[in-house]
Amino acid sequence: MDIPSRLKIPPEVMSRHVGEETVLLNLASGTYFGLNLVGARVWQLLSAGESMPTICEIILTEFDVRAESLQNDVIRLLQALLEQGLVVAD
Amino acid sequence: MTNRIETLLGAHLSPCSITMPVRYTELSARPQAAISGNPFHQWVLPNGQLWTLFFRNQNGYLLRFPDLADFEIDLSGTDVIGLPALGIATATVEHLYLNQVLPLALSRQNRLVLHGSAVDIQGMGVAFLGESGRGKSTLAASFATTGKQFLTDDGLQLHWTSDGCRIVPSHPSVRLWADSEAALLTAGTERAPDVKFTSKARILAGRNVAFCNESRPLRRVFFLCSNNVSEVTIESVRPAEAVAEMVKHSFLLDTQARDLLAQHFDHLARLAEHPIFFWIDFPRRYCDLPIVRDAIIRHTTSTQYKTR
Image (tube, rainbow over all chains, first blue to last red):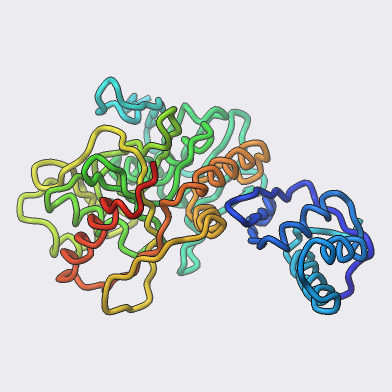
């Protein structure tokens, strides 16, 4: 699945910070999704309207990860969020 | 109008307990007329049978249990009217009301209501959540027949107070399959009349099945697993997992009311911050229930897991 260059969070999706994770809930479908610390930061940046390249750049400065594996992880996460309707193309 | 039964949930509670009024009125039986428009939601049983259709009407909601009854719930969730289908006894309609409709009406009042049973252990509220058939009612009845008291069999209602989250007692009855009834209860235990749609018996609280009629502080939530284990296992649940599990077991009348859903999500997230959530698994043999009860009591009263 191709990742659109810009993504947005549809109005029917809510997020709450719980413990060290973030839980997403799609009110329309009842789908819920848990994000770990890095995933939660990606979500926060998505919520702020940042593009995928910018998100990767910021995460690289904040977490001890290699650029290549980070990009793969972010792509996988965004694909999953798209499939679950938790983000859509802007 | 017949059978006007005005009930208060918690009318049997002491004055200092938490009460939440739901007025219920049952009208006379009538054919189930066709309803125009499509339901906005529906419940389907695991065998594919259509169980409940959710419609909107001018006053709020209409729930249809095909060939059994309709229930009208007003927008505030405080007034419910039961409309039995022809040939359906009051006992069946009352059973549907208590176990299905009342929790949904309470959810419309922004109450947090989950599919779960609960018991009182030394003044602490202990809840059991899980899918149908995991043993929620059997566990509650097991405690209630061996010196403890049950708070609810299903429709676990939680209420926030300045003192934290409390379990509110619900109707003083437990629904059991015949094998659990035979294993746990003695002869002479009072039961409500049989109902049309299930062979589960509704056992009334009394001398043999003890009921706690006051709210209790919530101290444990056990999610029931079913992995064919040979001994009792208890493991902690991450807060995010707890939210996800509670979402699965929530009573929600209006799944499209965004404000209510947002508040419901807030309730769950707030509750999940407390370290009171655990997975529990145990052998599904009646002879092992004393061991299971003992493990739950020890865990609940253990200082290792004190939450306040």
